[in-house]
Length: 381
Image 1 (cartoon, rainbow, N blue to C red):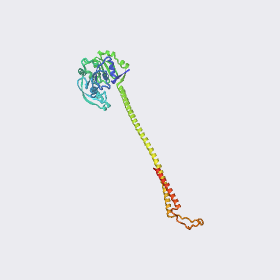
Image 2: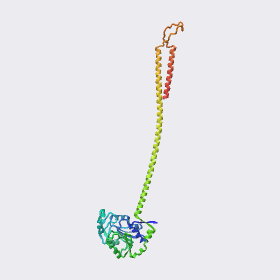
Image 3: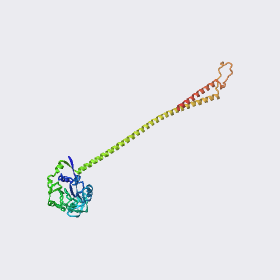
Image 4: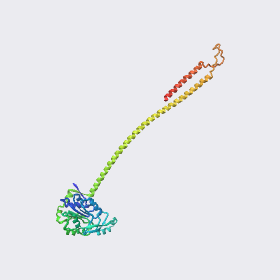
């Protein structure tokens, strides 16, 4: 089952469509058109290819109509029972602005309406008969006319030439009647055929047969499912938001993946640097241990060298002492050397055997120490 989108406030567009299941590219007149989409009775038909005349006194809505309905005739004016100008009281809220002095007086008694504020300005007005004569093509059928003028309905109907310009269907907002206009329509040979709780629908009696073929139920309750535009629009907005959020999420995920890859690469680079630094630190620690071992060996060699130097100095001193102060040898006991004339200690001959023995010890020890020092230096190197 397909959807039927209603743009009107109370499904007026679908009720009117029920009178014209056989019409394509029809023609409408919207008196008090207001917004071109929101609560519009004619937007549904515009999308189906219909065209017509939109009459709207409020400047802001006329500009919107001109932009949205370039194929239509969009008039910034009001409709009354005579040509001229009237003061429009424009309220911020939709559907309240009016030419009616009675409604203006009623609104002044309403505290909420007073606090809302309003703007008064003069607007050009003309009759329906004049507008139709100027803008409706010759022999053009006016399929329907919607009238929503906030209290000025009587003057609108009074200003038409019903013998010349006869819309087939009239849709009239009837919830706030200031001056009863029903007799005007009865005199113009229009018959009320439907009431939707807010609007009354009239058929020109020469087209009353269309009511017998009223197809609203079949078209919009059996074959289609009715959805208000504001709901469909809200759903579409939600879908748009979901799509936008999904797009943003995908972009964020892509940026996150990119950042993660960049951070992962940076981490790998840092880890490689840390690994190299650790290897360098281990190498430096090994060199430091090697240097400490060498320093310890040098200390040990230094002690040994000092010890041997002391030994050398002591041996040197001993040799000097032996040369300067010869050793006194005691006299042998009597009878050991018969004929000997030595009776007291005699000086030692430097070339004697004892001196040679001391010299040999000094030479041997010195050679050993020199060899040891050389070996230690080689180890230290």
